[in-house]
Length: 174
Image (tube, rainbow, N blue to C red; front, side, top):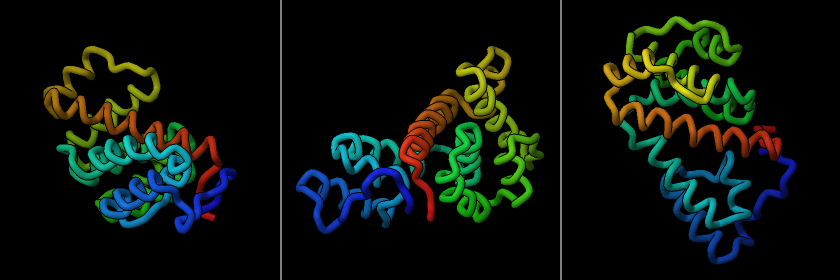
């Protein structure tokens, strides 16, 4: 991973950093992406790791849905690091290479289901205007339920933090 930040040496972590490192390795198996930056603030890393684990693995969204949300955030923030990490996962989850390219380039994308289309529309409007209009909100609640809408906003918010971290510290695969 390339970064303008000095990346932590796992052999020189302090006690707080080691605790976070163990937790991250247990849930993800690697210390990559924003965690390399967040390890400079173990408390931030600890809280972000827990929220990220929920947003990535424990919501009511299928993998293809959550990965599409992550790619929409990455496209909005023009976050190369986030794209590098999540585009392969999104393709394995079921998005086509053309759909991924359309999302990256912020072009209209044809999606296979009404649910994916609503998820895409809600996320795009939220990212564009920082709000969701009444009509689209009601459509989102009908399709996703209240819990789904709350979790969608949580995923978009968390991955916006990830994108800002990766962009601020110019973090990406070398």
